[in-house]
Image (cartoon, rainbow, N blue to C red; front, side, top):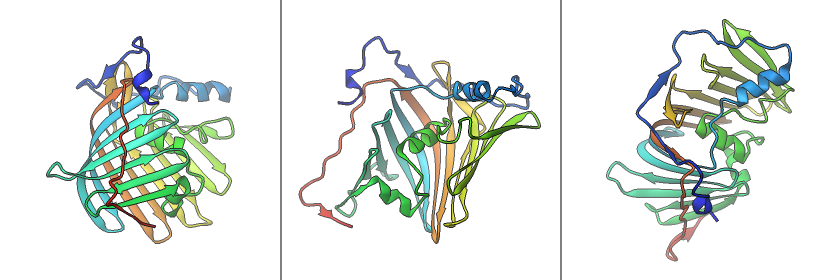
Length: 255
């Protein structure tokens, strides 16, 4: 069941038209000599949610095929990510449902349907990418696989930079003056794969928590290049959500 069963006691927080800029102020917290304390501080800045609904204007560049669309994104923490894509005319052209195990995509324009295991994403990204990575990237949070005591944290001109190695990939996570993630860079030189996530330098205030105003995601896997630029226009967290996904019988299943 989706988040419709959330207790009424949960606070429903809607996006306010308040923008918090990072500004030039230095980080107030100096690096501790105890790495665990530094990790806790960074994770404490993450947006906490059970459900999250986001609306965004999107620019998609899929191997040179460029489109401007609107995306409605809904997430239920740890369970599913639902995306509805509409064209400028307001017509829904596609819908997707991603879970930790599978990916389903319904192309309304061509009346076709795709159902694949989550590993299908590896065609366009590193094989270490997991469902919780997608959640963290879309919400502007830290990625748990990176922000742990196996990584090194440095102070660079008053801003923190986290660096580490995970199997075949080298990663860096940059934090701004508000201790929020400003950029991820993930590289696998062995397979020629790279992923870069960069956030706009300002945030929306959602019930006292910071949510990014936009994100740019650039993925390269061999000759496949995907660029996605999202400009968030609104967000709601911890509200009951539905994740409707059905496929008309006339749709053709494709591989």
